[in-house]
Image 1: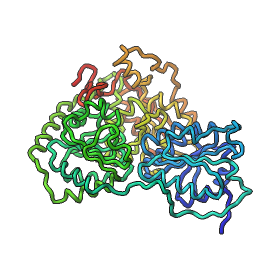
Image 2: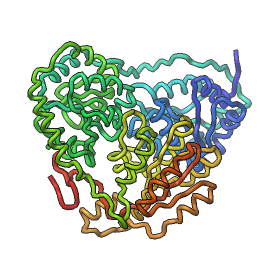
Image 3: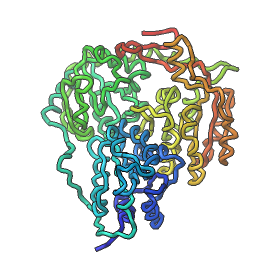
Image 4: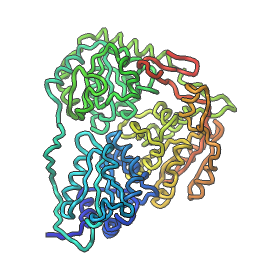
Amino acid sequence: MELLSGADMIARFLQDEGVEYIYGYPGGAALHIYDALFRQDKVKHILVRHEQAATHAADGYARASGKPGTVLVTSGPGATNAVTGIATAYMDSIPMVVLCGQVMSHLIGDDAFQETDIIGVTRPIVKHSFSIRHPSEIPEVLKKAYYLASTGRPGPVVVDIPKDMTAPTERYEYVYPKKVKLRSYNPVTRGHTGQIKKAVELMLKAKRPVFYTGGGVVTGNASEGLTDLVQRLGYPITTTLMGIGAYPQSDRQSLGWLGMHGSYESNMAMHHADLVIAIGARFDDRVTNNTSKFCPTAKIIHVDIDPSSVSKTVRADVPIVGPAQSVINEMISLVQGKEIAHPEALAEWWQKIDGWREERHGKLYEPSAPGEPLKPQEVIEAVCKITRGEAFVTTDVGQHQMFAAQYYKFDKPHRFITSGGLGTMGFGFPAAMGIKMSYPDDEVVCITGEGSFQMMMQELSTCKQYGVGVKIVNLNNGSLGMVRQWQDLNYKSRHAHSYMESLPDFQKLIESYGFTALKVERHEDLEPALERAFADNNELVFLDIYVDPREHVYPMQVPLGSMRDMLLSKTERT
C-alpha cells in the first residue's frame, strides 16, 4: 500500500494517465501541487505568461492530438483568467481538464484572499465540474474528469481543489483507478440500426444529395470512414469551419466549406439539395443563416453524438444519435454492393455544381498590381505553397481567419485549428505553441492579425523559455478588419474604433525577445521572406506582412437570407 499526499496523488495520477504536458501558472492555493510536480520528471509543466494562454495551449494540443489537454491554475484571478479558454473549448467540444487551486476548505464562503466560486462561474461553460472534499477521493475524481472530458461529446471539465486537500502532512492510500463508474453518464457507442437503415434508403434514392459534415467527424476520428463513404456514393461534400480537413479539399467531390463566408458552390448546393446528410455538425447560425429559409427542398439526416443537438435548430427527418465513426462504418456496410437509384439525376446535379464552380472561377479576388498593397489572399496561398499544404495552421479570429480557411487547402483532419463557436481573439498564438511542443518536427503556422496577436503576445516569452519554433504570419491591415468590413457594409463606413492608430514596431518588439522578425510591404519581397522564415523548422519567425486594408472577405451571406443569398464582391450579389 502506497501512502501519498493529495498533491503527490495528483502528480502520480497525471503520470499514470499518460499526461504529457500540463500548462499553467502558479499561485498560493496551488503551490503544494506545484511542489509535487517539481519533484517528478515525467509530466512536463509549461509555464505560460497568462492563464488564458494555458487553456488555449492545452486546447491546441487537444485539437491536434485528440487527447485531453491539461491546465493547472491557482484560485481567484488565476481561475477566472482561464474562463475564456474554458468557454472556447466548450463551444468547440474540445476535451480539457482544468485543475484549479482553491482556498482552504474552512475559508470557502468567507470571501477569503483570492477566493472565487469557480464552479459557479464556469457552470454554463463546462461539461462537468468537481470539488475535492477529501484527499482520498482525488484519484477517482481525476479519472472521472478525464473520462468525461474525452468521451461522448467532448468538453472541458473543471476540478476545484482546496489547498488543504493537497497538504504534504496528510497521506492516504493511492491506487490508480483503471476503470470508472458514473451511474448517470452512459454515452452511446453506436447509432440505432433502424434509423441508419432509413438514412441509407434516403441516401440511395436522393437526386440532389449533399454531405454536410462538421467538427464531430474530426474529434470522432471518423475522417477515413467518411472519405470512403462519400467516394463510394460519388456525392458532393461540404464541411463546416470546424470540419475543415475531415475530407480532402483537393478532391473533386469537395465543395469546400459552407456558411457565412463559405464557398459559392457549397452554399448554392446546400440550398438546392433534396437531401442533406449532416454528420457531426450542429446547424449553427454561421451555417444556416435564416433557419426558416434553410434548405427549403431538402430532407435532413442528422447524425450527432449529443442527443440535445439533434433537431435543436433544424428539424431532422431521420435523427441518429451516435458517434460519427460507428454510424459511418455501419452506413458503409449497408451501401456496399448497392447502386444509387437515380444516376442520371446525380450526373445532372454534378453538372449544376460544376456550373456554379465555373461561375466564380478566376473571380475570387483581384490580385494586387505592381506597386499596390499585397492582398491577404495572396499571402495565404503563398504560405500554403511553401508548406505544401501540410502544416498545422492555427488562426485567431477575424478576416485573416476566413482568408486562411478559404485559401489554405487542407487534406488532413486536425490540421486547421481555430476558435469556431466562441470566436476568441488571442487563441491562435498560444494554440500554435501547444501544438508545436507536441509536434516539433512539423511546421506550425499561426495566421493572425495585429489586433488578435496583441492579446496574447506575452507568450513570446514562453516560446523563448522552451525553444518553441512556431511561424507567425501577421496580416497587418492596421485595423480590426472584420469589424471594419461590417462597418463598411452596415454603418456607411463609419469606422468607430476599428482602426489601430498606435501599433508597436513589431520588428523591434519581436527582436527584443530574441527572435527574428521580417517586414514585408511589397509583392516581390513576399516569397524571399517566406523562404527565410521557413528555412529552419525550429526557429520562431514573425512575418509582419502589410496587406490592403480595404479588402473584404467574400462570399458573405446576406443577413437573414437563405444560404444562396450572398454578397460576392463589393459590387455583386446573388
